[in-house]
Length: 103
Image (cartoon, rainbow, N blue to C red; front, side):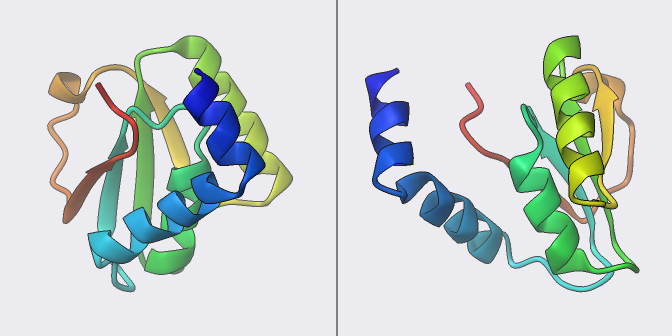
C-alpha cells in the first residue's frame, strides 16, 4: 500500500475524495448509499452535500470498519448512518450509489 501512503503524504487522497463527491453530483435532499464505506470519510462528506433534508448510509461488510466509521462520525457530529452488511442485503430505494476504492 505504498501508493496510499504517498497519496496521503502529498494530499492527493483528500482531492480524490472531493472529486468523487463533485462527480456524484449530489444535491440537497438526495438519498445516498456509500458502498464499502470503510472509515466513513466519504460518507461524511456526502452528508454535507445533501444537507439536513438528505440521507446518507454507509455500508461495509467489516464490523471493525463500521465501528470506526461510527466513531469518526460521532467526533464531527455527522448525520451519516452506518450499517454492517453487503449491498445485496439492502433493498433500499436511493438516488445515488457511490463507492471509493471498492474492489
